[in-house]
Image 1 (cartoon, rainbow, N blue to C red):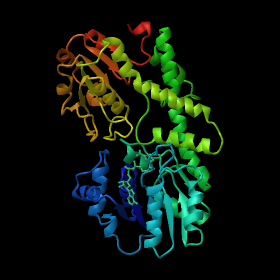
Image 2: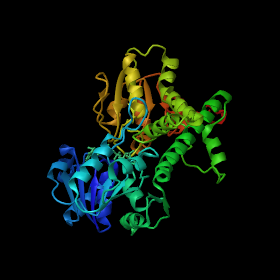
Image 3: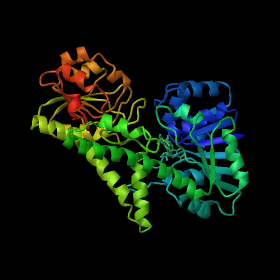
Image 4: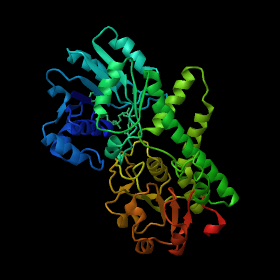
Length: 430
Ligand SMILES: NC(=O)c1ccc[n+]([C@@H]2O[C@H](COP(=O)([O-])OP(=O)(O)OC[C@H]3O[C@@H](n4cnc5c(N)ncnc54)[C@H](O)[C@@H]3O)[C@@H](O)[C@H]2O)c1
């Protein structure tokens, strides 16, 4: 098939390369000329393990072309897959302008019938409205095919998904979209458009709920002297609970959970439903993000002039994505309170850091001369670093806030750190 992928971000770039790898002829399009140039030159604008090799292989084979939108000529193909962004607006609603403009551009460009497949995460009910307002009466079909890949393992997730969800209006469009995944063995969930959209939001809302739930248990454990690591082990052995997304810490961030949870909350309100559980999930998460700041205040009182090292900026390891990362909140707070902040991340290079924050090129440079360290992203490079020698670079009182419960408490204490984790005040760890 001939497939056009609109939007070459974390989702679209992986989708374009992977669909080409499956043997289809793919054109990937973006409005950002700089981004397209970077992809073509082989110096990727995003960090995603395995993506560079997959893109280069398929560009070289002639199955994949990456174009700026103004370079596109002729028909787009049998399938137009939309993977543009859906950021949050001020109110919490999803901003649908990129998706809408990609559909309008497709309608203007394409003469032959095709299936428009929306991969972007859009609130339940949007697809039906888009179909009714833009596509009804045209030769274009509309399908919702929400994406579940995780940054940092997106290529692997594409080829080994837990499921593929397709929401459509008829069997013909199901079959066309299924053929994008014909070499992939996985359950297919075929449903209506709105249910497909809801599956994506329900999945993200549920995972966010698990995170806020374990963070509430961690807060209580800290007050009672219990240990969250053991509690997690104890509850997750129950297969009804499972062990995923039960890590206490400084809360969820990234380009999906915060915006999707807020958008679902907003959507619920517009329907007259007060989604109380989701409200609490958001409130708990906002509180978690403040934990390292409060811990530093409690230990040091005034933060003015305090040398602090922030370890990890990306919202999770193995990505350079800092969208809505908890680290950014912390950096702003620390710099507003006059701390001398150095930060380090193996991959993330955020543009909008407070001007007083020094972005360091190595972990050692970041740690040297500080009195307090805060781990915000559990990169293996940081966790497995030589902490014996790093500890010697930190000035007394060597305060360590482990925002991801990723380092061994006993070991850090033996290296002279005053160690604080999240829900790790249990007596058996002292
Ligand atoms: N990032 C993830 O891990 C992930 C996972 C699952 C689902 N999603 C969803 O997938 C969608 C895309 O996410 P992302 O992280 O790849 O976004 P992104 O912001 O990284 O990429 C979007 C791309 O679309 C381009 N674009 C915007 N308008 C365009 C237009 N009219 N024509 C052509 N290109 C256009 C932008 O320049 C950008 O490169 C979002 O709805 C997101 O919620 C993301």
